[in-house]
Each structure stands twice: as C-alpha cells, then as structure tokens.
Image (cartoon, rainbow, N blue to C red; front, side, top):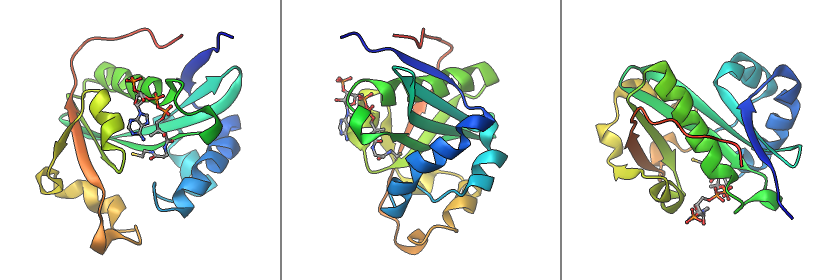
Length: 163
Ligand SMILES: CC(C)(COP(=O)(O)OP(=O)(O)OC[C@H]1O[C@@H](n2cnc3c(N)ncnc32)[C@H](O)[C@@H]1OP(=O)(O)O)[C@@H](O)C(=O)NCCC(=O)NCCS
C-alpha cells in the first residue's frame, strides 16, 4: 500500500495532538517538556506530518539569528517511525529556514546517526553561542547534559516535500 505523507504548518487545532505526541518523549527526557500554552505561543515555529491523514510527527524550528536556528521537539509517533517522516519534517524545517534567509541549523540530540543521514556533522557544544542555553537552563539535566550537538550549513536548494 502506498502511504501518503504531508508536511504542513501547524494550526491551533493541532495543539492537543502535538502535546500528546511530545509528552512521552519529554517524560523520558529525550526532548524538552512543553505544556499546551508553550505550544500555542510557539505555534508558528511548528511543522506537523500527516501520515495517511493522521497527525504522526512534529518538529519545531527556532531562529536565533541570521546565522543560526535550532531544530527542536522532533518526534515521530513510534507506530509510524522508519517511513521517512522524520526526514521530511527536518527537510521541511530546512526549507522554511532557507526561505527565511537562515544559513545554519543545529540540533542537540541522541540520534546522531539519523541526523548524519540528513547531512549533519557533529560539533562541540561549546562552539554554539551562549544565547542558545536560555532554554537549556530550564532542563533538569542542564548541569549534566549528554546530548550531542549536530549542525548543517543550509544551501538555497528547496525540495518537494510530498511523497
Ligand atoms: C528520530 C526520529 C524522529 C526519526 O524519525 P523516523 O520517521 O523514524 O525517521 P526516517 O524514517 O525519516 O529516517 C530517515 C533515515 O534515518 C534513519 N534513522 C531513523 N532513525 C534512526 C535512528 N534512531 N538511528 C539511526 N538512523 C535512524 C532511517 O533508517 C533513514 O535512513 P535512510 O534514509 O538511509 O533510509 C524518531 O525515531 C523519533 O521520534 N525518535 C524519538 C524522539 C527523538 O529522539 N527525537 C529527536 C530529538 S532531536
């Protein structure tokens, strides 16, 4: 069976599902905790993936400046993983960021091999500017963070996100 994946901007009606998608991974400290208000306040930064019409993935891109943005809150529903949704969400963020004129994107992650397949390189966390730690200071593991920083230089190439 051919599955259809659609990547689109999040809308207010998606907030509850986004919250439910993120919650189990936030509980395991894989991503940062977000409550519903926080998702509403950052909704313009979110993309979602519909998999055969059902919301199955989410990602958020936060811009710090012309030379830097962060991919955050990347989650694909466990039942829908390994179907290319995560890749399309990250590529969707990159496309949005290129359109915004941003030249570099990074992520703090445990899935470095996933990001490597998408062209990201491991960099030292110390190379990232101090302003990115404004979110991290609210994390329970700030003092003992074992996430790995990956980054990618963005080119002007835009791709078709529908499959
Ligand atoms: C990481 C995650 C988003 C990947 O989503 P996904 O939809 O399963 O990924 P895709 O199917 O698009 O995979 C793209 C490629 O990465 C590979 N890949 C996927 N997950 C991987 C992993 N954990 N480790 C190594 N490679 C991985 C796939 O095999 C695929 O390779 P290919 O292009 O050679 O076929 C998903 O596993 C997830 O939600 N994990 C839990 C939350 C998390 O860790 N989020 C990241 C926070 S920064």
